[in-house]
Length: 239
Image (tube, helix red, strand yellow):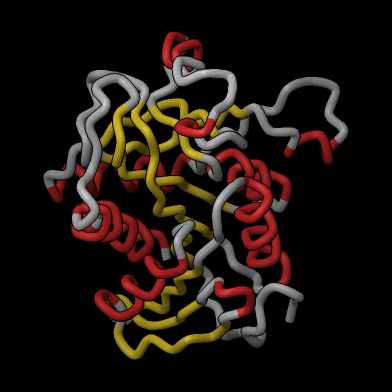
């Protein structure tokens, strides 16, 4: 169907969970979906479709960074008639009130990326999530007893640990209220807005910029379960 996705039309569900890591797509497909079938593996970005409690759900990796997430989300929205994408990613926490392992729901996304330049806007775009998905996620998280924080996320082209401008460059965004930093939410939200589709970014805070604490290697798999389970329930109730 596209240069980046060999699934046939109709083989991708209307709701897609989108981790950055394609290995996480495999984990979701094998652990949570029934009758999951691999539909695409172009460039190693694995896409599966299966059933969650009887409802068709797809899960597809998007890679690292806004441009990669933007390509895959745009093609899912426009070539595969996907209506909803729920990002299930990781992030670095920028506020001391957010504990390692807590979930951050991106209410809005700010960025240092040039992604929105393509729209030729006469101002600055601050894309937001779909409000219906947000309210559903909040309600479901409370029912499941999962700790979440909703607010601004800063999506950067620069992975914070490798930022040549210095390890403290995140503090300005923290002062303005950003809860966490990732790399993909801005491009996803902007693309959803351009395509008149729905998007929500649910992130697990795996590393704290304020305390220096983070998940151990094993926790970077097991510690993501609450996020995945919340996203699946949101997808189910939004189908």
